[in-house]
Length: 264
Image 1 (cartoon, helix red, strand yellow):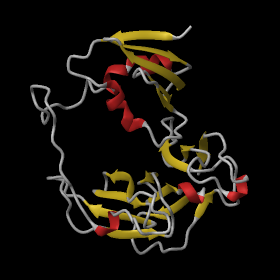
Image 2 (image 1 turned 120 degrees about the horizontal axis):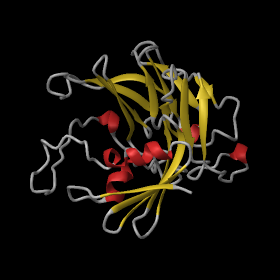
Image 3 (image 1 turned 45 degrees about the vertical axis):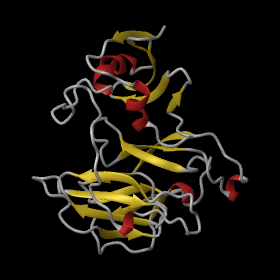
Image 4 (image 1 turned 90 degrees about the vertical axis):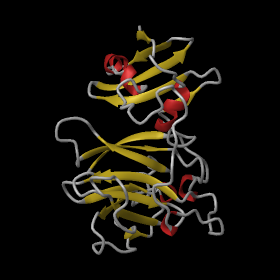
């Protein structure tokens, strides 16, 4: 039997909207939404994997299955924003405002390029030790960084080229080793690059997917494992199976989406 719990949020809450940030593309195998607003989400928790079903009617109600189900249910309010800092949000529950933090040609979508359906800026990760924000620009095959002012959180310079030649999506940062592992989506690899400009080029260093693997088709995102000593060594990557661009090596047909455990 699944575990369950209910929770009454003390603030206006749109559950599908809040959880939508955890969905990575239409082929995300870990996320499913139903027309009635019910969300299904599979996660890797400190206690193991688990799947949770979340509904609102009008209370937030959740059911969970798997070794990590108790952990998911215990942290449900936190997942939905109960512990978020609200100092910058309107006290009356109104709409918060957003602004452009930085605009640069290296972040732009290329509508006239060979694949106009590819996004501009895509994956974004912050390296807290060095105060750099790293990002991929898929359409331009760029991996860039920009320094962040630690006091104001504003850009502290122009974006710098770090590496290129890959159709990067999201990525994992290993600040201990000074490298990033980038999911290349349509190129069906995970590439390893240095975080330091000048130590890379347009020559790619693929650590997975070369030779081609049916398990690693359309990789989109990776996160480090949460177990002891897994940071920088064990990551979990999701791949959409080629829903957007099935590779000829896979017969030109989309394959089942996967979640892969990758050891570096």
